[in-house]
Every structure is written in structure tokens, then in C-alpha cells.
Image (cartoon, rainbow, N blue to C red):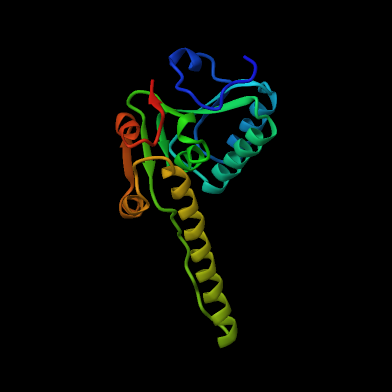
Amino acid sequence: MTGAPSSGRLDARAFDMPRILLAGAVDYAMYDRFRDQIDRAPDEGLVVIELSTLGGDPEVARMMGEDVRFQSDINPGRRLVFLGKAAIYSAGATFMSFFSVENRYLTRGARVMIHERKMDKMLHVSGPLTSCIASVQAMLNELEHSIAIQKEGFENLVRGSAVTMEEVLRRAPDNWYIEAQEAKALGLVADVL
């Protein structure tokens, strides 16, 4: 298929043989599998990226997403499409956010789970007072930048949909589960297969 259109609803036949198959934790091993498969995918036409995950490292998801963005710019004749199967939790939703809505699909019964990033750190303050301030400031900087990155991801996810940032920010702290048909009704995905 040469010169694939950048948009247009796809039917189930388009997803018969996904070029990139990813399942499991979003981690560096998944990233290696992803890179290997995307490097072997054709430079033109439809390339389906199928994912099922209970989550993982959000920074790895962002790396994969940036690769999708770069590849879309490098090869405009190739249409990269996301297919979420069964569970698209946490880092999976982050990865999905790098695809435009018209290039996002879910299988029937799939669930997308959106939540805030988590942190599990202890801050032990000990030593000269100026070094104590530096340790506290470093932790505060990490929190503030993590929140900014999280917000960027949420904005990418809801862009072009009926979901507002206010709703995401209200629901994400409690793990927001969205069933496939609801995701379609909200405009978060193009269709459910």
C-alpha cells in the first residue's frame, strides 16, 4: 500500500496482521522489541502497532512515542496506527497519547487506565543546613517537572476529544478506567474493533 492516507476510518481487515506486536510491561526490553520491529516495518503504507500492557515505565513509553512521532515526520507516506488490546494501562495510555485520535483503535472490551504518576521516595534530611535545603529543593524540582511532564501527556491524550483537562485531572488520582466503547464515545479513539 503506497502513500497511505494520514486519516480515514479503518475496518477490522486493516488490523489482521499488525507489523509491531507488543505485550507485557513497558520497559527497556519492550523498547528494544519495539525498535527492532519498527526498523523492519515498511517505509510506506499502513503500519499497525498493537499493544497490551498493565503499565510500566512512563519514560520508556515517552521514548517509544517520540519514535512514532519521528518516524511519522521522516516517512510521511507511512501511517502508524495504534491498536490497544485488552489492557492499556498507565504507560500504555502514555504511549497511545502520541497517536492522533484518528490513528487510535481499541478492541472490544479493552480498558484504558489513566492515572497520575506515582512516586515512592523517602527524603532524609541530615547535615549542614545549606545542603539540607539543596536536598529538599532537588526533590521539589523533581516533583514539579514530573507533574509538568504528566500534564503534557494528559493534554496529548485528550487533544481532539470531548474530554477536558479538568476531567482528567479530577479522575486521574483515583485510576480512571475507560471501557473501549466509552473511549470511542468520548472521542479518545477513532473506533472499536
